[in-house]
Image (cartoon, rainbow, N blue to C red; front, side, top):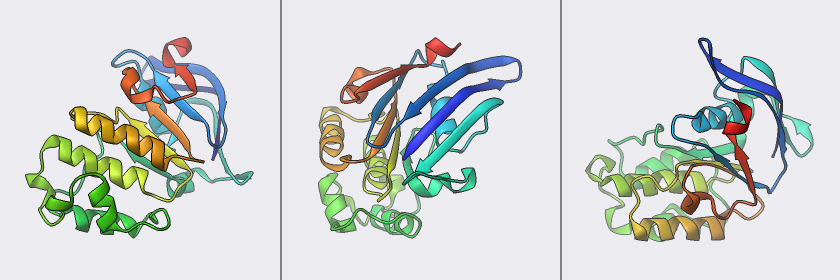
Length: 205
């Protein structure tokens, strides 16, 4: 997926989160959105996802050189973020099956294999509400990384992960992002060190 922002600006009331932001992110690019806590990284990621409108400028999305309507952008991306919750009454198996109804899994992998990869095979049939915060984060990462979509958005992806979980995150990046456009919103280099490009939101204040 190609994402193009032209003189994009977003404000809440009279406060500009960012303005005059022009950039183009090409298929297969890996980009880190950086900046201090509260600087608007997550807001920019929400704009890129099509989930939040801008106040000025333009955002365009293309897949196979064809423009994608803003209302259909969500069909072409997956996202993991602290503010997106899992359905805690479901088991991990049920949640991934439910998610699979809306986003196909990458070819050649089953839900059972996914749960084994993320280290939750022993808890596959336990309700998510009984999971630790780190286990819940693994489920969030699974639904994002294993969706068969061209754009992967990651907002503070190592939230609540211990050292083993962070190692898993790096393994998922290495094994399951080839050919995808990946955008990471973070101020922690551990989460975005693999990115080839950095976009500092502080440059657009």
